[in-house]
Length: 103
Image (tube, rainbow, N blue to C red):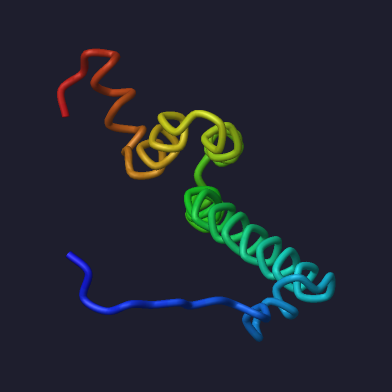
């Protein structure tokens, strides 16, 4: 079914094409993309270091363990979860439970 005849021909490129084809615009796009990647990486580092800061504020004996679990948690996420659990666990009660004494 043919509704109306068309004979569209393009004699020139769209006006935005010169901008998209320019080197300056491509560098702008690259810099914005790298900026976003750096910003996301910084936010991920901040989130991963929250348990470390909490352990240091509370003065926990396992602060170094929490630090290394946080750093290695960037590679393998269950280690970061262990760091969070290490902060909220009452280690005195755990030691008493392991020794078999009643609370």
